[in-house]
Length: 249
Image 1 (cartoon, helix red, strand yellow):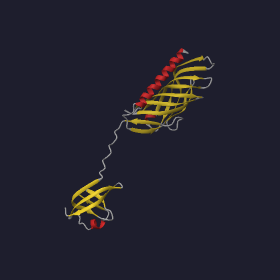
Image 2 (cartoon, rainbow, N blue to C red):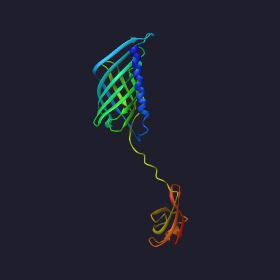
Image 3 (tube, rainbow, N blue to C red):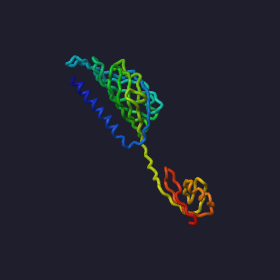
Image 4 (spheres, rainbow, N blue to C red):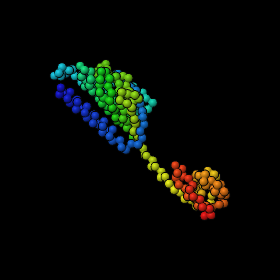
């Protein structure tokens, strides 16, 4: 039981690391929904399984194993050979427990590297994965779920990263810059020669304003490229609209 307790401490450390990654996203401006599927049922290397019985008669099995397979996605970061290093602690009497570890995808642009912690319940695991995507500067936060069997043979099948997992979706957080809002001027004055005039709009010194029906007759009477005027326009219902017209300026 002492070794199992140490394993639980390691699991808690992984949870803390995941939260640190998720909490450090303030510098990221691009948020994109992504999804993928995976299966990893081939055991790679040594599998270590230890079992004990608790004082209340429950059988606890702790397993360390590595599984390989394939991840598929329309997102390049989640497409390629997958390797999953796992550590599971499962109450096999009640079929509940914890599965955590590292999921790596050998994508075309490099390696997507995720740490995950999930809850095991009667043959299925669902949890949260966080880490670095293969694309430079991009982080990934994903709900992850799969059917899971500890040991050898064993591994993950029908796995999902986002895309309707038991926990929800997945997103990539990329670097970027938010464009500042352009200032909206509520009033505009222009002096000079009329360059365009109609019953619906007038342009003077590069300023174009909508013409209300109350001033349309006066505007239509103007001669473009001849008459000089002073116009004042105000933002009305989101449109810069002529409110004053003085001829002869």
